[in-house]
Image (cartoon, rainbow, N blue to C red; front, side, top):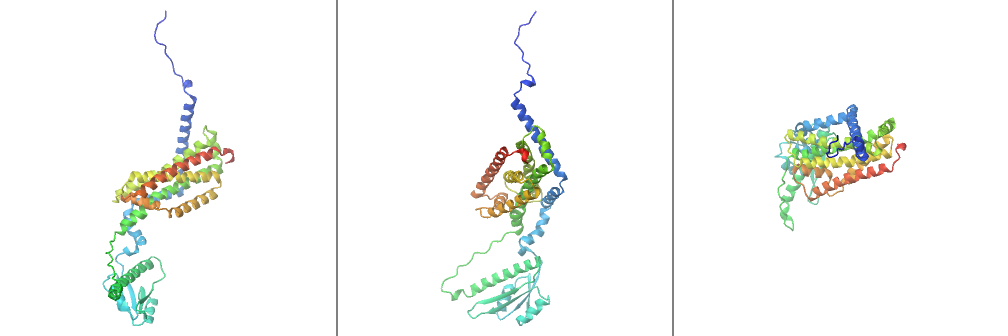
Length: 375
């Protein structure tokens, strides 16, 4: 006795298209290689140290900026009094300028020789000799010590003194000129801490992970080739292109993840960051660009030292060429971070994203024409 009913079909695993199974197997292999790549970074002391340094800078940025800003803008250093020796027949012009400056203590000497003797014996920090010339101008000769940070601070104070003195002389002799001198608008100063944070600190924390990711990619691929472990990877059902994709996924993902973490720490420290998602996306695009170039260099030069030299030289060359652009990448990051992007800013964000995609496609295309046995 038979029962009538609709026929039933049992789907077996063998009925699944082979192409689909192959793609899933390749994807699983790529993810496995990528996980292995990330796990191996823990044994790289140089990489771990670089990550810890970035973490320290981002975590304690509000404290570090107080000291680092003195290097970025020495004129912002408060509490430092400069003892300046002044001599010459035009010393009154100098004293008139620095008389109201609490950061400069004037020590007047009768002759330039006495001033030089005081400077040589370290009784003063710097010396200025001002003399009237025959054509009605004032010539000033300044001498500062040959040191490091202290010299930089002194030079800034001497420069500001000379600029103020020049402005006073212009105003004094303006009535003797044939043409009227226009009044210069008052200088609108800004906090050096603000400028340092957004023009130095934030771009540093955004770009450093990108360059480290490219260096990791170069090291990883060249070491695989030199140690012979690349052959072991190829024993698995993966192609050279799959290995490249896995390494690019592992190393290029580190940069935007770090950038997001650093931006979060800056925000936690009280530094407001605008357009954080765009910044993270920009770092991701640059990471794909730099890592793709690094992988291409590693495939072309199997020797680790040679590949790292070519990569470092290429990075330095790219930084030099970037200075010729209408907007430097650091300025792009700074303008995005402060919430003041312009037309060039958005244009370069798109350009960097396109360059990242082009570099990846070019690397994959080059892999297709490479003989894995020759690596």
